Amino acid sequence: MPIINVKLVEGAFRIEQKHELLSRLTDAVEAVYPGLRDVTSVTIEEVKDWGIGGQSINAQKVATHAAKNLKTS
Image (cartoon, rainbow, N blue to C red; front, top):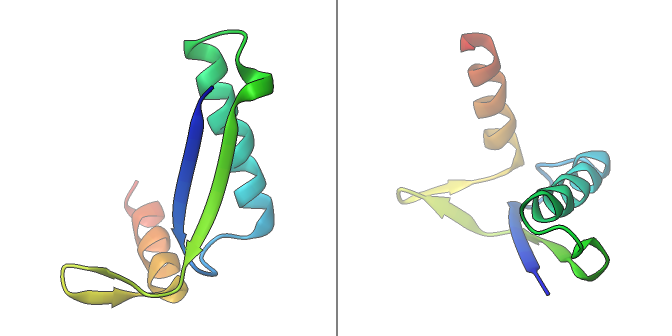
C-alpha cells in the first residue's frame, strides 16, 4: 500500500492546489501500479520553519520564485 507524504512551505499552496496534488499523485501510483488507487494514501504536511541554503523560506518567497519561473518559460 503506497504511502506518499508531501511537505510544503506553510501557506504556499491554496487548498485547490493541494487537492490537485492529492489527486495527481494518486493517479501517478495508479499509472505505475494499477489496482492500488483505493489503498494509496497521500498526506500533505505544511512546514512553518523551512530553510534552503541557510535562508528561511516562506509562502511569499515560493510565490515570487514561481512567478519568476513562469515568466522565463
